[in-house]
Image 1 (cartoon, rainbow, N blue to C red):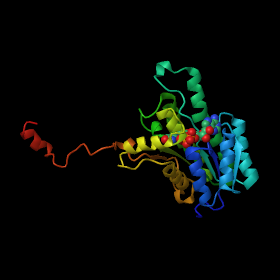
Image 2: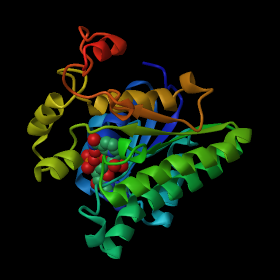
Image 3: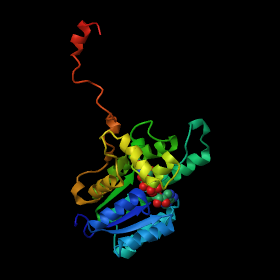
Length: 277
Ligand SMILES: NC(=O)c1ccc[n+]([C@@H]2O[C@H](COP(=O)([O-])OP(=O)(O)OC[C@H]3O[C@@H](n4cnc5c(N)ncnc54)[C@H](O)[C@@H]3O)[C@@H](O)[C@H]2O)c1
């Protein structure tokens, strides 16, 4: 308790999954949180369980005016905004590029990229004036390397890494930090829907992610991502900006499930050569 005392955080997509886990985490460390989402009932249920340091406001991140109003509501309710977590998302357009329609492509980028742009734009305005702030946006391992997500998703998540780095160079002079996070799959409704076509089957998703984890028996959890958000939101990361923090058990750096490929008993390569191997 106390790592976020007196801080005010806005979280988009805060009614479910990672956004909800981050809201609980920041609140438990003393923050006030304002959640924006298109799920009205789930958002209302969240603030009912979080208590009086939380608020919910309907917000579709594809609508700039709604994102601006969400951020303004945090300033009106709690006096300021210290942390902006641009998190709302969907998997979006699936399948081969040749079958991806421009409507699906644009719809996906509208949520995953334009929504982040609006959040960055209106949060940074307040933070530059205040001389401090932390903007955290949701990328993905699909934004760091190829082959780990559908095309439009990967394009948007790579772009989040790019705009994070660029905005960091603009606002550092004002004391504002800009970072993004890049998780591998964790068991949320979005992933359950994508992998098992059932957004409610979190248990089966968790089992699948446990089986394929490089860290044997240890799947990634929404709470792991929330811990990364907490660190980037708090003053503990005060000298970190422009960074993409992977939360992936080393998957993007080569770690795979199962035993290591190189046997400890293998001879040196030159000895193997002598044996004609
Ligand atoms: N779960 C994972 O494994 C994983 C991995 C990497 C990145 N991510 C990213 O994390 C973010 C959160 O995903 P999640 O897994 O928690 O999924 P989730 O489905 O549990 O939560 C996403 C939330 O975003 C909201 N949302 C969707 N469209 C919106 C819109 N237009 N405006 C406002 N809110 C909207 C949904 O209503 C939902 O509450 C996404 O950006 C996703 O791409 C997730």
